[in-house]
Amino acid sequence: MKPVRRVLVANRGEIAVRVISACHKLGIESVLAASEADLDALPARLAGRVICIGPAAAAQSYLLAPTIVHAALSAHCDAIHPGYGFLSENAVFAELCEKNGVTFIGPRPQTMHNLGDKLRARALAKQCGIPLLPGSSRVESAVQAEDLVRDIGYPVLLKASAGGGGRGMKVATDAISLRSGFETATAEALASFGDGTLFLERFVPRARHVEVQILGDGEGGIIHLGERDCSVQRRYQKVIEEAPAPALAAELVQKIRDAAVRLANAAGYRSAGTVEFLVDPETARYYFLEVNTRIQVEHPVTEMVTGIDIVGEQLRIASGTGLSQRQDGVRFSGHAIEMRINAESPAHGFRPSPGRIAAWRPPVGSHIRLDTHCHEGYLVPPYYDSLLAKLIVTGCDRPTAIENARQALANFVIEGVQTTLPFLERVLAEAAFHNAAHHTRWAEELLQQQDGVLA
Image (tube, rainbow, N blue to C red; front, side, top):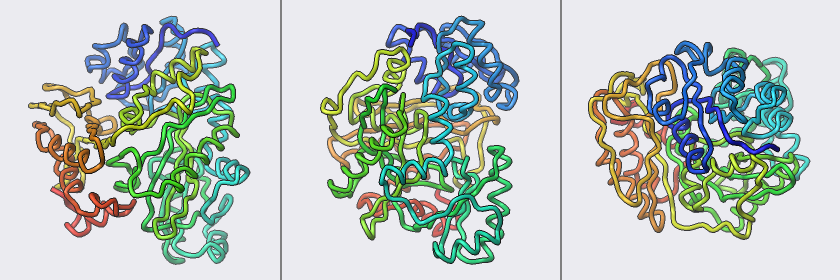
């Protein structure tokens, strides 16, 4: 692989800032591919050069693979970093980069193709001896789904094979909801991913969502950076993440970590990736869910407890330098919690709240990290994801980290747009969270208790 000296950052918001900062740290030039709506945003001010790739609409800018590759070639970039979302897990885009001699900072296209499809990923996990939830192969019709569920049992989850982010996913508790869910999930999957393929998986209502951060050099070297708990979710969207995962037996944690490395080895994995698992607290069993073949939104909590710059590792691997650490050199220290702060109104069903930020006074302290692209006077656009910032707080242990997180939230002042700060404060105040008794449906149950509102 050729050395990476100039990177096109094909993303926006806080992840663009994060990648640009990592490039600067390693002495790599950065060029930002930005839409018209983002030409004056913080990433554009930090990058060495900015190229406009189209109008505000993502379909006419950040999702145009040929335009982004052309921008990289015109700026003489060696590589493209896709961040997360947009084209980050698009194998066709990765292939286009390779065909044009531009390094794609991520896994090989074939790896993305194999792991990005949930059915193929499940098959590989099965070959590796990793436990799977009872489920099915491709489901062609609602009638077939009813036949299959007789063996799986209710409740079941209809899942899009090509999906992610909660789209194309529906829980069914009986034949009626199975039939309606099949139609809805198929339509969502087609609209979101261009592929309506569905499969069934047994649904565990009180599950923990645990994922393992892995790094691979593409030459057989694989390490893990420990696990994260991402169980606080709303509509399958992660809200709060932490590392390490609390209240899990050491033996179970080691099995989950080993399974992630085993799967990554079988896939010949290159770059950063995340292997996701479901843990059933009642049985203390774990099951493979999926693989995310990109940098995760929640990667900072892992960085804070390991001291390893994951984006920096991606850049080194892309340059052919390889991993900076062996597994025996990875050390874990303290506890970290990440809270996603969105421009949404909890008092109005989490309705998006674009607009101009009139006041922006984030908390400060040696135990606080803020990943953001926002500032006072910033105009939050209505075109994209509503994420404003990721507030990451550390402590010597979990109780200390939780208390530090509560204080940090209380001291965060944002005016001009509605935010999820009240929602986060309420969640962190709950005894169930303090006792690590939360699960993937817990936050939604809290909302139901409050008539859908946490404010």
